[in-house]
Image (cartoon, rainbow, N blue to C red; front, side, top):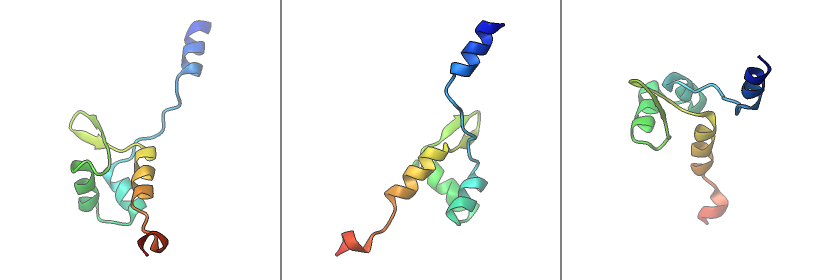
Length: 74
């Protein structure tokens, strides 16, 4: 029993995967646009059967890559 507990406690922390509706809410866009971003692979996805999910760190990276800075555009 101790061996099983040790394996579980040493496993990497798994964060909740986001659905397209979650992505849409966080980005303040429509659900269909969130699906488009996911299908076009602008936001990387995890495939589970026919479902697509987004890791929170991938959504954060997408947001950071798309920050518009007026300082950089001058």
